[in-house]
Amino acid sequence: MKAAIVGAGGYAGQELQTLLARHPSLDCALPMRGRAQSPAEGHLLALDLERLGEVDLVFLCTPHGAAAPLARVALEAGAKVVDLSADFRLKDPAVYEATYGAPHPAPDLLDVAVYGLTEHNRREVSSARLVANPGCYPTSVLMPLLPLLEAGLLEAEAPIIADAKSGVSGAGAGANATTHFGNVHDNLRAYGIGDHRHTPEIWQAAGTDRIVFVPHLLPCFRGILTTLYLTPRTGIGPARAREVLQVAYAEEPFVEVLPPDTSPTLHDVQHTNQSAIGVHDAYGQLVVVSTLDNLVKGAAGQALQNANLMLGLEEGLGLA
Ligand SMILES: NC(=O)c1ccc[n+]([C@@H]2O[C@H](COP(=O)([O-])OP(=O)(O)OC[C@H]3O[C@@H](n4cnc5c(N)ncnc54)[C@H](OP(=O)(O)O)[C@@H]3O)[C@@H](O)[C@H]2O)c1
Image 1 (cartoon, helix red, strand yellow):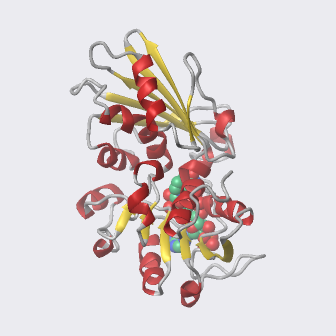
Image 2: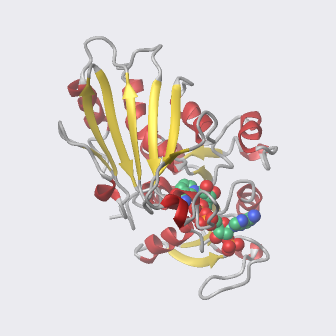
Image 3: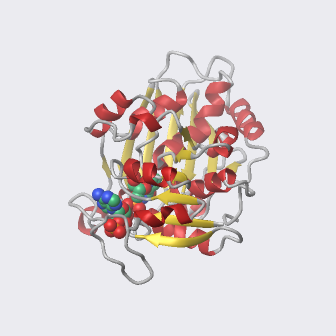
């Protein structure tokens, strides 16, 4: 089968090219630049909308706002689409406009789009034509949080604190004053406090706005570590929480729930599609540590899981 990557030269697009190079049955036939004015360069082709109908599936690795019109062209040409941008993640166009500062570019396609948190939405993804690949931070928060919420282990009124930290590749290849080497190296900063764009996505997927999400910029290239501070219901301790997660992910090759007193690090997950989760008690609170590689499970790897399902292939192909 054949895929196109639009925005193949960006960080997420490069990661997808690497994964597809090892894929036994999905070929990256059209690695394209993202913008119409970007010329062909090396093996990267100029953007050619006419050719999107030649492939089975198009990965969109372009910024939000730019992705939605490209998705429409690809769908109309008969290709399936996995969009790595935020364009189809939020179901309410008013929330999109409030979050991204512009009207939704294709509100009629919002009903067609399926949120691709693969382990939690496998059936819908399998029959989807358009998948909204989740954000990297939301994936790191939701993987441990959803099973705990669904099992009713958390105190209903208590806030859920999601203290998240990402390597600088999460911001993409273009440097700015915040992300250039001199301001990242040997430094650590919180950002987007109270208004980060991933907060509405996390709230929507978790079904609650009790979540206080604060991201931080780490002085390393790749990986996310999120620490969740959770108030358990009376009588619920880390052993029960760990058991719930172990049962939820027992059959999942890309999720590892660690044994007691073990906390995952970035080195455990960098360059892999793994989500690793450690569960702890701290003074009666549940403390859950979640790590993943923002470019793999947080972007290209999860996109490939979704693409495999959409194409009727085995979900883990190209990701071992
Ligand atoms: N980085 C991550 O960890 C991560 C994780 C999850 C999701 N994402 C999402 O994935 C997408 C790509 O992220 P990235 O980190 O790979 O970004 P990036 O490194 O900045 O690359 C973005 C690509 O988009 C293209 N582009 C830039 N402006 C464009 C426009 N106005 N119209 C069309 N194409 C445009 C560029 O292509 P040309 O230079 O070829 O024109 C570039 O290759 C974004 O929507 C991002 O939010 C990223």
